[in-house]
Image (cartoon, rainbow, N blue to C red; front, side, top):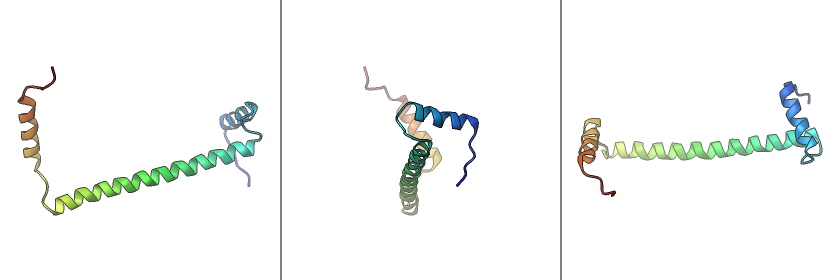
Length: 87
């Protein structure tokens, strides 16, 4: 497999090897790919959590557990008029 890299990426890889933390450019690339795979897994987990949260909201709407916008803003204005308990 041949991979074309920008000069900046090549320099970054070479610098990683120069630190001694990695023994070869291949090792740096393999580590980068492992990290990319981990990032993809984390993003998938976050996406699934978001989908679940959205479904909770959809289920609440379907059960009629919602307020219209005017009511929401009325409650916000009402709360903002009350004195704060912080002192």
